[in-house]
Each structure stands twice: as structure tokens, then as C-alpha cells.
Image 1 (spheres, helix red, strand yellow):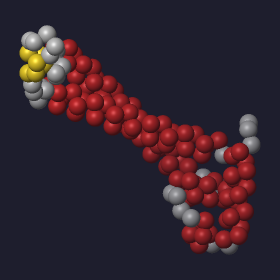
Image 2 (cartoon, one colour):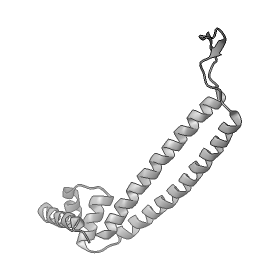
Image 3 (cartoon, helix red, strand yellow):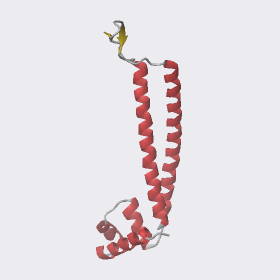
Image 4 (cartoon, one colour):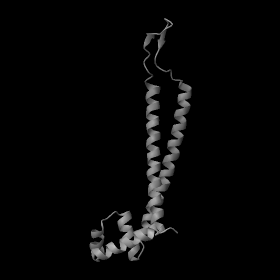
Length: 145
């Protein structure tokens, strides 16, 4: 059942890359907002008696460089995600072609995320038998190699 472990690991990797992409896009939105709408300067008196500003000043060339860096990382992240999604699609195709009952049950349970009673109905086996096979597969997955 190492193949299904690899598949599940790949799904988790895809989830992590999607989170990273979401984070980078949020960072880009915030930077764009700061660049397009610089903070309003409110003059207020400080202890020296001179008017001062409470907002930070944006260094546009530095912000532009940072924006280009974020854009590059977003592009790389999207490239990796597309490769991983293609790998996932290919793995699902191969996993679906296995003939053994154990692999078919594992595929339907883990990839298609069907409940065991539906798997039993589709395959023409009793629910108890499919539950036993699924339980055996879970035990095999927990045994360290």
C-alpha cells in the first residue's frame, strides 16, 4: 500500500503549495494596496514642538523590487502546482486500473472518498467483507517498512 501513501503524500504537498500560493497572492495584494494608496500623513505636534508624521513612508523603488520578487515566486509556485496536479491526475489513472480487490477498495475509499457501504454495493460484496478488507489495509499501512 506504499502507492496509496505516496498518493496521499502528494495530495498533502499540493495542499501546502496551494496555501503558499494563497499567502503570496495576499502579500502581493497588500503591497499593491500600499503602493497605490500610500498612507495619509497626519501632522501632529510632538514634544519638540515641530510637526511630525505618524505614518511610514514607502520607498517605491524598493517596493517595486519586492513586488517583482513576489511575482516571480508566484509564477514558480503556479508552475510547481501544475506539475503536481498533473502527477496526481496520472497517479489516479494508474491506481484506478489495479485489478486486485484490496487496491480497488483502497482506491475507492481514499481517492474517490466513497463510504464502505457504497463500495460494497458497487463491487457486489457484502458490507462486512469490504469493511474487513479496509480494516486490513489500514493495519498494513501502519506497519513500518
